[in-house]
Amino acid sequence: MIELNISATEKEIVFKLINSKPKSFMDTIGSDKKSIGMQNTEKQLELLYPNAYQLEVNDTISEYTLELKLQLHEKV
Image 1 (spheres, rainbow, N blue to C red):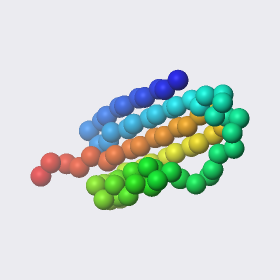
Image 2: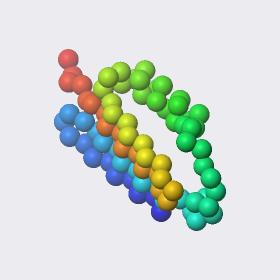
Image 3: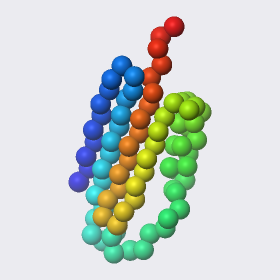
């Protein structure tokens, strides 16, 4: 199951993702290291939204959850 929620206000956009893991994946021992894809994503967020985002990632045995909040800037 994959669940994706996107909401927006005048001040921020919030992305929430929940991705369940298949039973066969749960039976394997995973690594606590961040994937290269996640590392690259965090670098890009820092370049594009310096000090203007919050990223929370949780990786459990049964699911992977992510919440990204992007602060919006006022137009000049």
